Length: 230
Image 1 (spheres, one colour):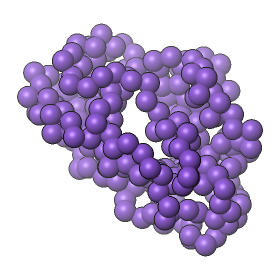
Image 2 (cartoon, one colour; image 1 turned 180 degrees about the horizontal axis):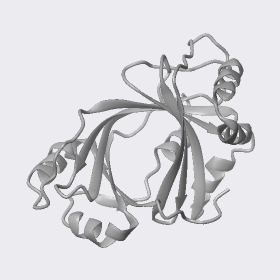
Image 3 (cartoon, rainbow, N blue to C red; image 1 turned 120 degrees about the vertical axis):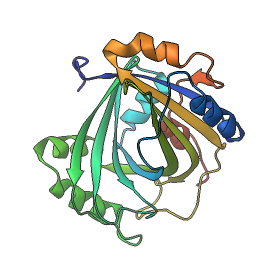
Image 4 (cartoon, helix red, strand yellow; image 1 turned 120 degrees about the horizontal axis):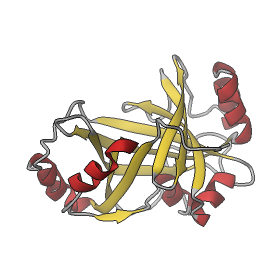
């Protein structure tokens, strides 16, 4: 499904540290010579990740394939499950470049007693043809996660940084309906992602010098999928 990297793909790199490092990181952003600003208010990000019955997305991530993709339904706010608008996202990655296919949904809600098969069927009907093709490949909900996100951008708007913390995860693999009560036991981390256009890759490398976290291939999806006992 990933034939080539589109010109609109972004350079992306991640940094990960213990959540106790968050204040140190925010001071780095505040004092950075490239003059970061916070263009949006912080918000809660929620996702339902999907996979095939053969766990193709999981295996691609475990194997570290240079070309891989994952499908998720994303919404914002404090609702534990989708309650209004959201979007299906297909996140594609090849090496250090990433891009998305996005399918907005105006109204979509899931009740915690509704079966996943019913919810997925209703969601699929709301999608355009291209979105339905993706859902046909990965129709099994496997993970729900949520986290707090802050957004920063350099004064020239060329490098964007997101800071994620307070993450929680809920395994869905053995449940016929949503599990939003039994959390996975995960390490509390702060996750920084630096993004820019492909042409600004060298600028991004300059910006992230002396960032007080270590570079990582961290995947929230993979971390959640490798946890058990949820």
